[in-house]
Image: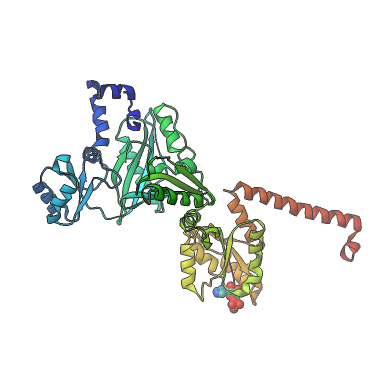
Length: 492
Ligand SMILES: Nc1cncn1[C@@H]1O[C@H](COP(=O)(O)O)[C@@H](O)[C@H]1O
C-alpha cells in the first residue's frame, strides 16, 4: 500500500481499481515492478552505474553451474519475488548443492537469479526521502545487525569512518535519484573489507532501519513519507540525539510463552533511561516474528550500548543500574590524586557520572593506548588527564582519540610545575589539548561540565547557577570587607 502511495501520477485508488496502468504510465509501472522483482531492480541499478554485487539470471541448472564457474562458491541463489527477511535466499557451496538450493527456493519456475557472494564487514542502510519536486534528503547512515537473516539491531549513526559514511550516502542518493516517485526509500548497502559500498536492495517505503528516527531525528521517516507524498517541504533528517539503537522485539517463542518473554523485556526497557517501547499489537506471537521494537536514544553510542546491555540482562542483574561514565579522569600516578580529586568533586557536584583511573604514559604505555582507543566506545565523552614532570599523558591520549582532552599540569617535586605545564600546553598543530592552570583540576572539571552542557540544557542551567553562586560569594565578601574594614576582616 505504501508503495502505491508513492506513485507520482497515479492515485492509489486508480491503481487498485485498474490493477493495470494506463498505457501512458507504462514506464512508471515498470518502475513499480522493480520493487516486486529484485532481479529487475538489480538490472535497473546496474544500468544506472550503481555499484552492486555481480548477478545473473538463471533459467536452468546448467545456467546455475555456469554462474558458479564464473562467480565461484559459495554462491547466493535468490528468488526474484517475495524475498524478505532471509526468505527467498539459498546458499550453494558447490556445484552439487545447486539443485537442492534451487529446490529450497521452490524450483526454477519461481524465477531465480544468482549473486556473487559478498564478504561484507558491515551491513549499512540509508533512508532517503524524495519529494514531489524531486528534492532528495538522506538520513544518517546506520548499521543493521542481523540474526538469522532478520534485522535484530540498528545502530544510528553507523560506527564507520566519515569517508565511508559519505560514500554510502552518495551511493544511496544516486540510487534514489535514478528512480521516480515521492516518499521515503530504504537503501540497503554492504560495506566490504576494502572499503567499497555495494547496493543490496532498495525498499520503497518507511523501513525497519529507519524506526529509530521516531525518537532520534528531527523528522521521523513516517512524517517524512507523508510530507513527501503530499508535496510538502521535506523535514530535517538529521539526528537530534548523538546516538540511538533500535532493538527489534522478535518473537522468542510461540503463543503465550512468547508474549510473556516479550513483556518481561518491555518491563526492563521501561526502566532504561532514553528507551521508548513500540508494541505493534499483532494478535499472534510467532518465533522470529517482528512484534515491536525498542529505541534507546542517548548522548553517545557507548552509553546507549551500555543501556541496551543492561536491558537485555535478566531481572535483578547488578549491572542493570550501573551508570556509564561520561567523563574519564586519568592521571600518571596516585601522587596526582590529591590534585586530580578536585575534578572528580566538581563532576560529583554537577551529577556527571565519571571514572577515576591511574594510567601512566611512561610506566603503563599499553594501558594508556587501550584506554584512549576504547574510551569512545565505552561511552566516555571527555577525558581529563593530569600528570606531572614530563607530562605526556594528555597529549598522547589526545592523539589516540577523537574525544576532547583537558590537560591538568600537576606540580611535581621539581621546577614548580613549569615542566608539566609546558609538556602539556605545547602540543603540535593538529592535536589539541585544552590545558588548565597548574594544579587547577577544579577548572578541568568545570570545563568538562561546560562542554557537556552544549548538548545538555540542564547541565548548562546548573553551570549558570554555579556562576551566579560564585558571584554572590564574592559580593558577600566584598560587602563584609567594606562594612568591617580590612583589619577586622583578617582578624575577626
Ligand atoms: N609523567 C609521568 C609519567 N608517569 C607518571 N608521571 C608523573 O610523574 C609524577 C611523579 O610520579 P610518582 O609520584 O609516581 O613518582 C606524577 O605527577 C606523574 O603524573
